[in-house]
Picture 1 (cartoon, rainbow, N blue to C red):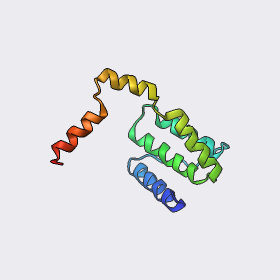
Picture 2: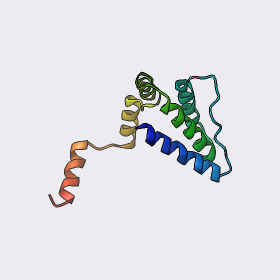
Picture 3: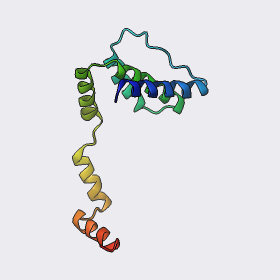
Picture 4: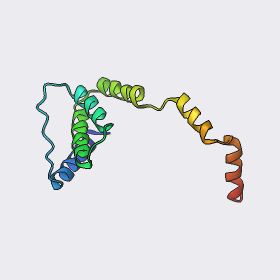
Length: 115
């Protein structure tokens, strides 16, 4: 995402928050942008109201815009490590649900389209 796109999204979140009567505080924290971004993502995973989530998302986007390429890479690695679905848990859930063999489903879908 380019810097101008990040700025646009940040401005959009600020505008929405303003309309909802919530001000997104400008970051004057002593924390690094990377730390603010990681903390913002963690907050977004918690229950909360829509307005507060928009404020946190706006702050996270602003922090992301400050990151260099190495920090962006570390951030995306953290997302992968911390927020990815567990493949084994997905398999168990799929089998518990009564999943069908993928090949059979695909064949039925293609046949139903008249192929």
